[in-house]
Figure 1 (cartoon, rainbow, N blue to C red):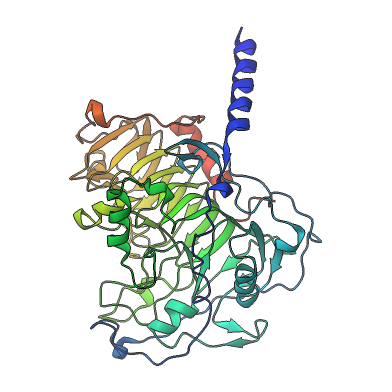
Figure 2: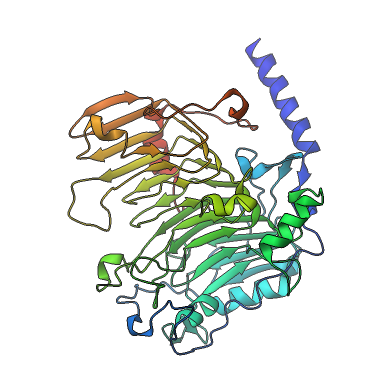
Length: 481
C-alpha cells in the first residue's frame, strides 16, 4: 500500500508541476531594466551626501585577497546544472495565484549563454541580454575594482563611485552561477555588491511609494505592479561583502553582499557569504562599521528562498524587511521567505531579523561562540522576530560555545511586536549545557487562528540531529558540479 501511495503522490506531483506556470511568463514588457547605471566607475572624489558620507572618513580596503583569476573554462563549455530550474520546495515557487516554476535563464538560447572571467564581461553580458532568459557562468574571481581584463586595479574613490561602479544589477530571467575553476575552487566575487531589483516609480518623475499605493487603491493586483524583478536564480558563488570606503556614519555602511529589493520569485542557493579578508575589526574608530548586510530581502520583495548556503564572519547578516510601520505600504502581506539547509557559522547577528515576513525556516545549522574575544565572529543574537512578522521554525541544530541553557531564549531566539511565532524540534548543544532537546518557543506568542498558516509546498523535514551532518556536507559554494 505504501508504494501505491508513493506512486500516486509522484503522479500528483507530476500533474501539478505540468500545470505550474513558468515564472518567466510573469515578466512583463514594461519591467524596467536597472542595469545600465551599474558597473560603470566614475572615479569621483568623496563628498557629503545629504549630510552623510563625510569625506574625512574615506578609507580604502585595508587588505586585499589572494586573487583567483581564471582565463579558461575547465568544463569546455559543457553545461551541467546551469539550465536547471529551481526545485518546488520553498516560497520562491509560489505566487498569490498558485505555484510557479522558477526557471531563471534556463531557456536561454545559445547566444544568451555567457562565460565570464572579469567584472566588465559580466556587466556586458547582462546589458546585452536584458530581460531575455540568460545564463551567466562565472569562472575565477570577479571584482569591479579591476579593469582591462584584470590587469589594472583601482580602489573605489567615493561613495558614489562604489554605489554605482561597485554594484551589479541582475535583471529578470537570469541564472547567475559559479563554475569551479581548474583547481576546483569556486567562483568568487569580491568588492562588488549584487542587486536584484530596486524600488522604482512608474515614471521618471514619479514616486515609488505614491505610485504603488495608487496601484493598490485602484484595485490592481500588487503582483502585477510593473517594476518587479522576477525569476532569478543565483547559485554556487562565494560572495565577499564589500568594504564600504566611505560609510554613511559611524554605525551604518551602505553596500550589502546581495540585496533583493522589489524582487519576486527569487532562488538563492549554495552561496558562501562572509566579510572575506576585510572584517570590521580592521576598521579604525570612529568609523568601525564598514559592512552592511550579508544578504537582505527588503522593500516589498516576495517569494524568495535561501537554501544550502554558508554564512560566515559578518555582523548584521540578514534582514527580511528593513523598516517598521513606515514600510507597511510595501511590506505588509509580503516577504514570504524560506530558509533551509543553511549554516550560520560565526555570523554574529540577524539570523535573520524579520519584519513583516511570513518566514519558514527548517533544518538549518547555527554554530557560534559567545565567549570568544574575536568580535568578528562572537555570537550576539540569532533569529529575531520583529514587527508584524509571522515565523515557523522547525528542526534546527544549535551548537553555541559558552551559552547556558537558561540563556538560549533571548540569545539564539528572541522577538517583540511580531504577529505570530511557532518553533519546535530543535537540538541545542554547548559546553555549558550539554545536549538538549528544545522547542525554541521561548514564551513567544503563537499566532491567532486567523494568522496561522501552513507552507503551501511539500518539503522533506529531517530531524535536527540529521541536520548536523547533512548541512556541512552540502552548504556553500563549490558543491554544485
